[in-house]
Amino acid sequence: MKLSHKLVMVSAAALMGVSPVVGSAVNTNVAFAATKKSKSVKVYNTMGKHSRIKPTKTMYFVNNNGKKTSKKAYKNGNYIIYNVKEVNGETYFSIQSDLKYWIPATATRGSVQYQDGNKLVTITTDGKKVVQTEKTLKSSSKKSTKKASTKSTKKTTKADSKKSTKSDSKKSDEKSTSSKKSTKKTIKVTNIVAKRKAQVYDKNGKKAKTYMGSKKWTIIGKGVQVKGLGTKTIDGVKYYALQPNHYYVKASDFTIKK
Image (cartoon, rainbow, N blue to C red):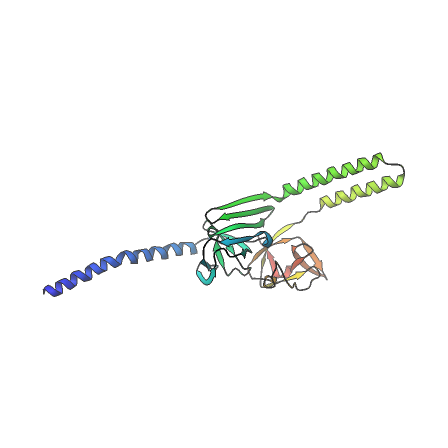
């Protein structure tokens, strides 16, 4: 009887020691479930040449659902960032355009840029803080047009002072009208989403061999949102410009984001 009583006491003590560990595991699962309930997330394409980071520690990337993958991000490794998104107030960077591998911005140091409408957004990280700044592109274009207009007026005044024949006056008028036409040109930015895997083409309508420095980025994954910087018709087919005069995608492969 004494032996069985001791066994009962030992088993009870063992159960009391295990119970806190079980409680922490439940809390972790609840926290992860909360992230799954987050609303739809906007994904922005970055400017690859101006978007590079270095992880501050070696860690595993997470997938598009926030689950850990088998791929490692190595400390102080150089990575180009192609996409940015924010989930539950935390910013994440994607190292591939197919959105397979993500890393939290707080675990990196560097600078990432992307365009949101008429704003140029810059994100800088130091391994602890994430600072986001915005710059309105319209204001910068206005300044450039003002500078262009002041330069054109200076040229016209100099031309007027040197007028000697009617041909000189005609030339100055042509220059002023051409400068006015150039300042009126604007690029319409359209948010578009890929309906399926979409091919990137060059300015001649042929499949691009590379895009953003790599061949694999010439295919844009289904559901990826990009910015169409104006349209162009090549051989009777309508295209959206990713980089005007360089890279394009077929308009039929995308829908306009409402």
